[in-house]
Length: 181
Image: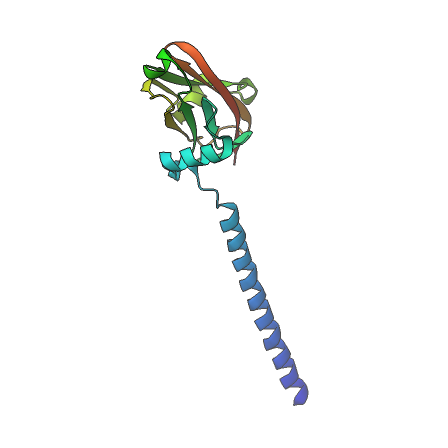
């Protein structure tokens, strides 16, 4: 009789340990997911939040900044994402007060993906803007929404952001977009 009750106690103890271990494992995975997803998607940020993040990263001495500050911006197929550009009026003198800015985004190095420029631009909303008046030392934040459709190839391409001021080249920047599953 003694052997059977010991076996039952050991079985119950084993079950309790397995259940507690699984609970801790699940809680640990949830915690890790929350830590890594702590970087909020830019699509959910407002202009003031983006502006403060850019100021922390770069200061205020650049005419054009792409946010987030990554070399490769990963976009998952079927999951909308966004990046932002900040244009800051750093002009001085008479040109500074009546400056009108425009921007455009141009894909580059996309042929390796088997894509056309029109396809890539079709995935983005907000790829160009014009008539943007920015006061002296002021800034304008523009969000660019990107949504990669199902069936798109898993590859990367470059996008160039060009800013013009009253028709003249003002600033350019670039980043790579990586399509992920």
